[in-house]
Image 1 (tube, rainbow, N blue to C red):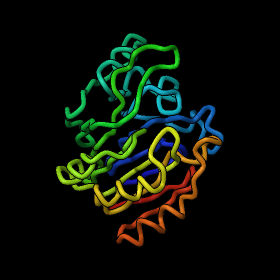
Image 2: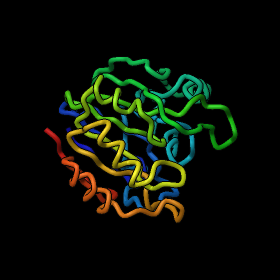
Image 3: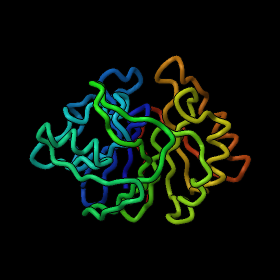
Image 4: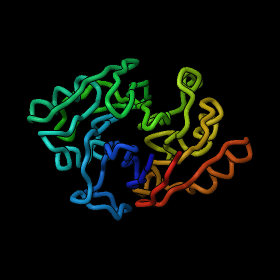
Length: 226
């Protein structure tokens, strides 16, 4: 499995069969990403919620003929009315696609589209690519059931916000890692805007002191996980 950090909370995944999955592809207006929308294609797009810094360039990148957009049911209805192919889930629901299973889990946050439409609850996403389990927390504060999420689906790669203000900060994210107990943690949702400044190395050092491995990827950086 190859993953590429797109900056903020966005990721590109490619499996061994060259299937491509995007998560929260916020490119236009993202001052940190070196990636352009015309460089990205997707067989699947997973959305954690509808805020513009996560919904992002979904409708620009998605191909109406082949891309399936996976998200909470209310947001899926909003997108499908625009002519795009969707697969709707609700919190706790899961479905197996050709690349692997996707399950939506709770996130403590809000969700609405840029034009003010109700978009259902915010979510995190637990999904598999090449038999590796990824937990993208979405935008959230810390909550105790993160421990249960990690127990039900042992996490290979955790993508967790650290920027504070709109999500958990470094200190709470460190506690969350101890609850989830992933094999590898990558910090997200920091330094894109003035309100979410954080030093990812401080986070990496703190979880390392607790026995957990972390990697602070630069926007555009790729990682191969086998």
